[in-house]
Amino acid sequence: MIRSVLVANRGEIARRVFRTCRELGISTIAVHSDADAGAPHVREADTAVRLPGDAPADTYLRADLLVRAARAAGADAVHPGYGFLSENAAFATAVADAGLTWIGPPPAAIEAMASKARAKELMADAGVPLLAPVDPGQVTAAELPLLVKAAAGGGGRGMRVVTELDALEGELKAAAAEAAAAFGDGEVFVEPYVVGGRHVEVQILADGHGTVWTLGTRDCSLQRRHQKVIEEAPAPGLSVELRSTLHQAAERAARTIGYRGAGTVEFLVDRTGRAYFLEMNTRLQVEHPVTEAVYRLDLVALQLSIAEGSPLDAAPPRPHGHAVEARLYAEDPAAGWQPQTGTLHRLALPDGVRLDSGVTDGDTIGVHYDPMLAKVIAWAPSRDEAVRKLAGALERARIHGPATNRDLLVRSLRHPEFTDPGTLDTGFYERHLIELTTHDADGAPVFALAAALADAHGRSRFGGFRNVPSGPQAKTYTGAGTEHTIRYRLGRDGLRAEDFPGVRLLTLGPDEVVLEVDGLRRQFTVSRYGDRVHVDAPPTPGTPTTPTSHTFTALPRFPDPTARTEPGSLLAPMPGTVVRIAEGLTEGDPVEAGQPLLWLEAMKMEHKITAPAAGTLTSLPVRPGQQVEVGTLLAVVTD
Image 1 (cartoon, rainbow, N blue to C red):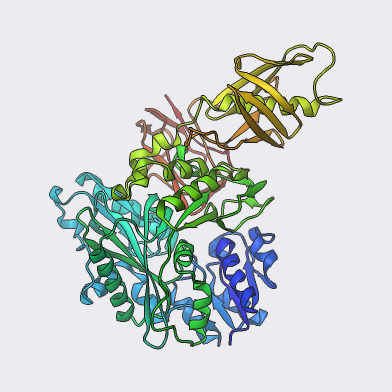
Image 2: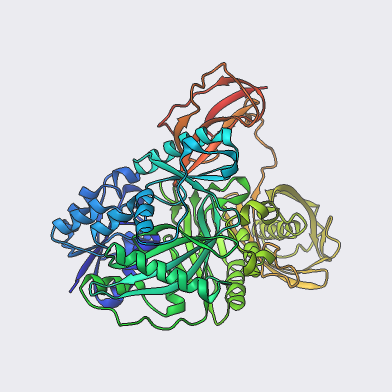
């Protein structure tokens, strides 16, 4: 029997495993970097062990420190979560050698699937359908487009789509460099890129007694940077024959490598309905809650049971209904998916949905880890109901702090191409990102008006309306992609505001403003954090894609005239690390508009910094490996 579990991970997955352990009466042990010393997973564990340092390479990727922590804390089992060392055969072996129970597949099974290139060779021998690899030295234009892919790791790192033959060599080098930096292994391979393909996967569960469950399918086609954004179970629109093919191939893959525990076999399904093996994730997946909801199972509890040697039932339970999951990221989709940092002041969702989160109110979102704040999961008897339920919960959420992808998620779930599952594919965001991220310039001003009125009430000595005529008030905010100057007058006759002829003030308070807008009563909740103001409102009927929340920054009446930068300056858009500079690039070199100059890494993603215009690189004050903060000068290009 397992009595205490150390989770060799952090954030949302650590909290998820701890939740099941508490229900089963198992003691919990957390590990944490210095950056995570006050994190929720640390606060919730029965015991916590410090891993000195901040960077993953010094902490969560140190197998020796993790095993030492488990032994020091008296753990008798280790759960790896996902990411970090969860698919590292050497770590699994080290855990077992230390006399601890490994809550995962055998090291040999992990090793068999560790390299995607080798895994495909193994699956080909087992008769699992897959895409034939391409020799990059023999490629012809007829074989385009191609996908360059890292042999190790995951999460979209080290992947490049090649549409022009002349770009292949450069993309091979770039993918290898990113893979080496991310996984310590720069091996890459090339395969055909399937245009219009769907990402479909099968959840498997296997015990040590010969039983393998295939727990239906999941569709994970909505992706950005080859990373999943929205997932659902079961995968919609698949024929009975295709589902059977996927289940059989997944089971064959598991049996071929003697698998045990929870895992996922991932496939690419082309427009003709033909499936190709992509890879096998030898761990629990981020999107496992949708399978749990449909099958009414606790996959973590089953992982623990299998690790203790218990057998599975002969057959899994029957599925019920449909579940959809959305990943809430601290990122700005309209700005190249740039991750965002800062204090998360509030994260609250309405009842009726499942929230798996690694953060709570007041936590700081830093630069060292993935920008995912939470997963929001909705279940309903049908797909349409589940999608509606999830979209409604997200638009009613209160998310105060860094910018997030919440509005993108709501618009994605309500997009005609998503609601019609026959048109799903991995190119969704390439086609629709601009329309999904366009700011609602028409709806934002009334939110800014509510912010200004609440601010006026808060600054009023007595609150409420003035009993004597007052002069006009003016307040300027930036937000929703533009600047808003609100001019209004509050007096005995009520509200008179410029540019708002159809607005009547009903109720005014420091945190709540109720307005009648074109005959409709609308209630606005106003929350302030320094010079940042978050204004939330219930959804307006008939406007399914209009944001229900806006964030504004109050501008000072007298801006600082010294707050200027030299023309052509490229400033760091986020805190991060300079991972590399374009080969051979030095100060004084001529550059072209859009030419890559350097790459920043933050929150497990690389961000390319390019020349804004043709000119001369007159300054390059950073170097590879340097840590930079927001606003740090990276380069200057003189036009």
